[in-house]
Amino acid sequence: MQHHPLSNHIYMKIVGLRLLLIFVAALVIASCGNKKEEVRREVVLQTNRGDIVVQLFNETPLHRDNFLQHVQSGYYDSLLFHRVIADFMIQSGDSTSRHAQPGAFIADESDIAMVPAEFRYPAIFHKRGMLAAARTSDDVNPTQSSSAAQFYIVWGKTYNDSLLNKIDSTMFEWTRGRHHMDSVARAYYREHPGTPHLDGSYTIFGQVISGLNVVDSIQCSPTDENDRPLDDIRILKAIVTL
Image 1 (spheres, one colour):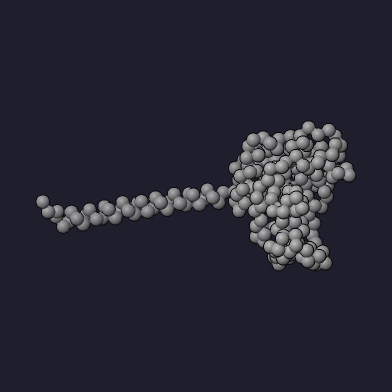
Image 2: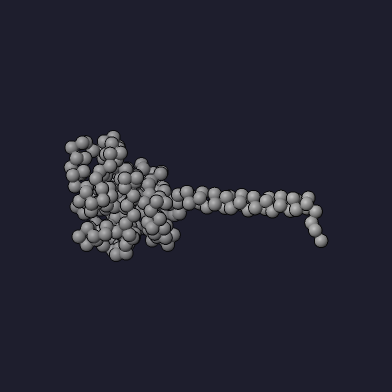
């Protein structure tokens, strides 16, 4: 039996409409996927000085996921900010600090697991409030891989041209031939605080979005000869909030 020409025309319209709906649905799914990728995870560090909220960078997925795993496992709960240097940074993440006696030296060596480096310089550099991974020195860590647990938050200071020139002259060596000082970063450090000598050789994986006043309170705390605060400053609990 032959189909009426009009029936063929209607059939083709229906097929076309179905294809269009499938295409639109695919676009919607892809759009939702992209939005999910754009979401930046957030963690609150509840300390006995106040809350610090950090946002993690999707540009450094290995460090982001590693940090989230440590937070969700409760690893950071009760750890000290065991190393604090005024006008430089505050550091935490050493598991031995959880039960460290007052005044005891914390060796910075409890964490032997490492995460491969994810340098994103010059797009991401050491501005005040940046969250970055600590690591062992180049002589025992030639790949400049990160500690899987220890991190620091940048405080820093501004730099004049003379100091920036000195940093620039050695940066190529520090970054193992990857970088000279970026002009945008250099201009930033003239006007805003940071730690330019760490650029390109330590992985930055997030930033403080709330609680810089707490970081300030910690970084200017009196410390002993080992840079440990005289009064314990502790992460009471770390929580993933987004």
